Length: 216
Image (tube, rainbow, N blue to C red; front, top):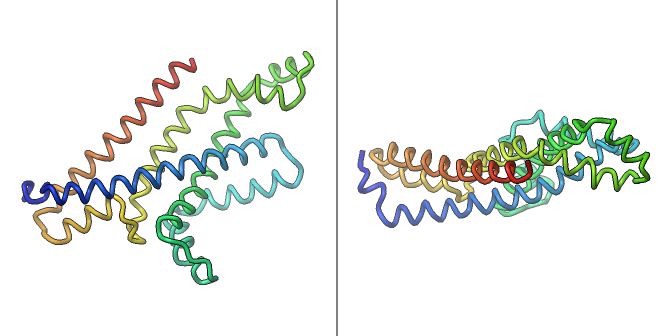
């Protein structure tokens, strides 16, 4: 094990560049999947005829596919039909599609967890469906959804490492390049990868905990 060589300034800079890509892909995917997943989950909760059934089929299909397969599909498969995307964009599309499906179920379940009596009371007091959803259902559902949503975001950040298979220059990919040059770098690289993922994800968990306390 050559820790001194593995953690040289150039190697650490290279790892930092990979971490920046990891965080960028994760951030964009989180924002997009929250918006899309929220829209799908809300639409399914509203039980819009035909649309809800079509969305349910789409969500169940994506949820039951491995994320790795979806990444292969967006990067390699779409090229076969003439839709070529840069590797970063293809990974973002794949992760957004997968996480949107997962988040839509969390959001739908959160909305369904609100007692029907509260909804009926709100409607009888003169609030329409949209007002009831906005002022009564969503505020309470969001508090209950924070833990599972954050867990899904943490999972998303960790899953960016799967993009190493399409050579996305993220953290794991760059570490792999470094230890590919010398066997003595393997364990030091794996250790710094574990440490970095732990720190980032633990920080995200702490932020989520604070948000949950404030909402409570």
